[in-house]
Length: 241
Image 1 (tube, one colour):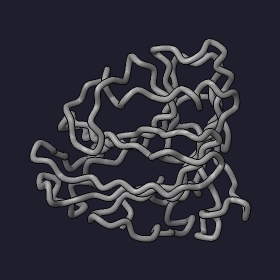
Image 2: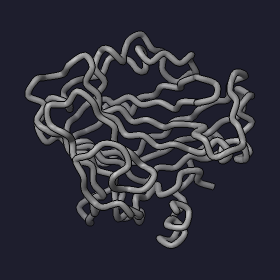
Image 3: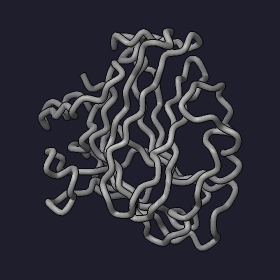
Image 4: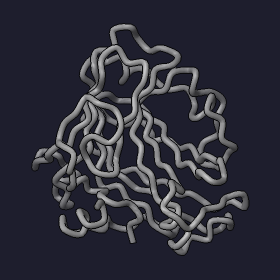
């Protein structure tokens, strides 16, 4: 049911902490950044009973980003984001009638930020060069919040049946103004890399050692978010491999 692999962040074959970009820790999830004064740290983070909202639902790990000290402030080309790539064949074979506006995917995830603010993200259809931007809504600092987004089909979408990237999910911790602009949320739009999301709030980015973490990432066919599909460590490891 869940098209996301390792959505509970159980598997981290490469390591548990890194200040590098790309895939370094939690399998299938990558941290990309540019223009930073100090590299952020990505890690597989262990959750405890104090993580109210997620721990009692069976989550024991998150994908955790800790900001560096961005002494130069929020530059126009600065960027920190999380990315997940879904193989095109997994979308094509999912049962989603992606060319119909009355057929839906539902994305849900749990998110926590040490800074209270709204964050943006998007789903990007690679073959169709289209992007579907969304927002988390205003988050309360240090509080786990479940976010649910419904993504409708579009006549312009297309997905191949191979292992190439078909749908990219992106959570934006900060984009500089070179990457942001006039964007309408919750609808498909033509790909424009100078207008990926609305202008980002810089509060999180300019806070030394600010943290952002996600877990329970689920993408499923239909217009309703169901409970997270927990799979065993062995199943997730095999899917990762």
